[in-house]
Every structure is written in C-alpha cells, then in structure tokens.
Image 1 (cartoon, rainbow, N blue to C red):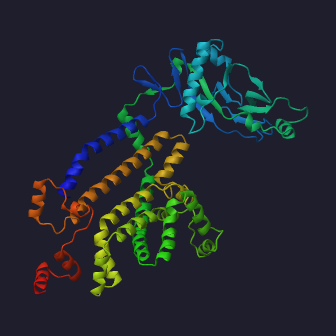
Image 2 (spheres, rainbow, N blue to C red):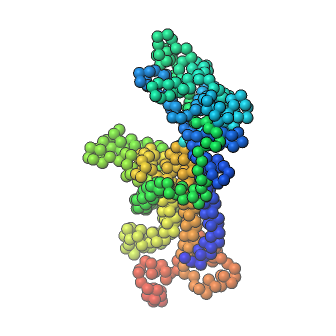
Image 3 (cartoon, helix red, strand yellow):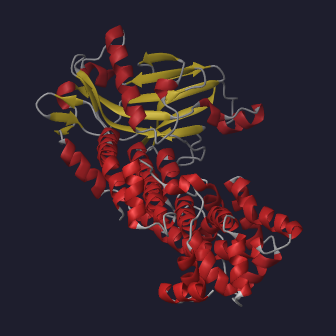
Length: 509
C-alpha cells in the first residue's frame, strides 16, 4: 500500500469503527423485545402480562386462514380451530373486532368485561402479542375498527353469524356462517345460494388463555449477550454462502466476457458498434424482473432453446446455475461499460505505434491495453461483483427461492420480512450495507494507489521539488488526468529492452 493510500485508510479508520459500532447497535435493537417483569424475569414469547390490571395472556396463537371443510361430517361454514386451553377468541371482522372472553376464565383472572380499564388493558395485551405473531401480515393495531369485548357465545354482525366456541366431537372451532341459515340447509349451502363468501367474514382469528398475573408463563430475562448469542446461533448463514458462491462464479464469467466484448466492440465500425453497445448495455436499463422473465421464457418449455436443453437433460429453471446466469446478466453491463470507457480513453497513437512494430491485436490487447486500463477495469470488476451480490428480481424470477440453493441475501431479506422475522431481515440488510461500504472503500483506496501510474517518468528530485513548491501533481499542468509516459518507459514497454538500450538507440539517432 502506498503512503497516500495508507493515509487515506488511516483517515477513515475511525469512520469504519463508528460504522461497525452502529451496525452492532442496530443488531441489538433488532433483537425481539418482550414485556419484562420485576425480579429479572419476563413473559414468555407467547405470553404477556399487565401487572397493574392483575392479569395476562398465555399461549397466544394467530390463525391467518381458516377452512370450509366438514368436521366429522358437520358443516360449520368457514371455521378456525380454537387452541387447546384458550379462553379468549379474537375475530377480525370486516367492520369491527370482537373479543370473546370465557366468563369462568374472566372471573378466575379477575377480569371484568364492564370495567373500561380492564377492557383497555386486555386490548393492549392482544395488540402486543398479535404484532409478534403476525409474521409480517397486517396488525390489529393498524386496524381502524371498533373493538367489542363480550362474554356472549355468538354474535351477528352484518351478513355473518359468528360462533366463538362451536364444539364438534372433542374439538372446538370458531365458526363463520350466514346470519340466517335456510331451514333444511347447511351454512355452506346457504352461503353458496346467496353468493356470500364466508371467508371474507373473518380476516384472521387470535386465540389466548386469560389468566391471573401470578399464572402468566415467565422465564429468566436474558442479557443482551444471551440474546446476541441466541440470535447468531439460530441464524441461517446459507444465504451468505449462496450469494458469495454465485457472485464469485458470475464474476469470473463476467470479467472475461466483459473485457472481450469491450475489446471487440471498440474495433468495429461505428454503425455496428452502436448496435452491439445497445445489446450489451440493455440489461442495465431493463427492470431485473423483465430480465428474469425473458430468461425464464428462453430456458423454459416455451422456447426451442429451453426444450432442447431439457430434452438433453439440462434443466436450468429454478436451479443454482440459473442464479449464476441471472447474476451474469445483470452484472455484465457494468464490467463491459467500464472496460469500454477505459479502452477508449487510451492514446490511439500509442496503439498505432505498436501496430507499426508488427504487434498483433491480441498482443496489443494483452501487453498495452490491459496494463494501462487496469485501474478502471479493477473498479469495474468490484462493481460487477457487488451488483451480482445484490441481485434480487432476476434471480427470484428465474432461479426461485430455495434455501441453501438459490436463496441469496436479497431474497432472504424479502422472505424473512414477509414471514415476520424482521430481526433476521434487518441483520441481512446491515450485512449488505456493510459490504457495499467496503466495496466503495476498496475502490477509493485502489484509485488512490493507482495514481502512481500517472507519475511515471517523474524523478525523485522532481517529486521533492513539487512537494517543496506545494504542487500535488505536476500532471495538472497537462490536464490533470492525462497519462504521462516518458520515452524510456515507452521503449521498454514496446520493445521489451532495457532503459540503457533505449538510451543508446536514442543517442545513435
């Protein structure tokens, strides 16, 4: 590392430390928090307590969907199971939210349905647990509806009749039926005749057991270190390894294809160059889902290419190679455009001089173009790798979401959030942010380090003189970013001879 790069890194080391500390704090804040009680204890994950009100809830469960199948040949309409031991049933109806409380359980827990404070405390506990069990869905706390707490066994609301605890055999169910069932008919038949969708009568149902505060299930409150260890112990790291493996393989292919495409495009006629440039660049401007859809069509059963591959035993759709192809498609334009810009910025006269010496185009590409354009190529390579690492839409469309195979970090973020695992989703977001920061930092450090090529041909005495005069770079007089190569360096680069031979040749001339 050069002195300038080292100073650059030292100047930003404190920033990096501060960023890591902020990310660690974010992870701690993301860890699930639960209601804590006195004495170093807290309610368990499916429990909540209100010590002021003197009661709490145990065994909370949320049913997002019901069923309309028969239960022991009994038609209950659209029904949800009632969890064993539950004494509180919450139904999110189209216009209101009803809470049924078993009268015996209410009396044992000291809950009074006519007491406004008790009702508000119970609603607060239900909202708290509904949020932790929502799995990313809509929350009761966000519903702008009237809450009704009652001990009635059933209620009619609009076109629906709700039975909170309908018993069939040894099981209990919450049933949604038409408000009026025709004589000699079943709830499902009546709903079908009237065109009533029973599934729309209950958006979801919550169950819990109402108990006194002393009977709420408690556990020792873990320290933040315990929470952190528990979080990382249960964390599935496969998305990271899938992303890393996919991006690394895609980078190798993208690097080669991008350089070759940029080299060949540079040497074509202007009309053909515009066409090739448009084809190679279009994945950069297309939405990733469009790229994924086109790949799905190309390699699926819909197109001859896909059918031919499938007939020969090569099935790409929803496989890890599909994830690699997706990463290549979206990252290739970055590599191509960066390399093309670097090649076009080279001195054309220098390349022509090499051709007059009999160099082949391949040798010019290998010995001149790549070394001189390498700083830009390296930056493009890192950007292409980061783009492949962050790909979401194309990969999800073409490769799907299979844990340990095609589930990359961006896909894991989406599905963890949809499943309600916000803490895990936030962790992967932090990983992506940190990785992006390191990529940008690496590019900046490498750019500073690559500036030594600009100073080539300047002696140490000249450098000391520039430093004493306060000039940061003598090349500023020649246009700032102009590439300066003296005759000795150019002779050594083209002829492969030593600087002494070059000097002798110059003297004879």
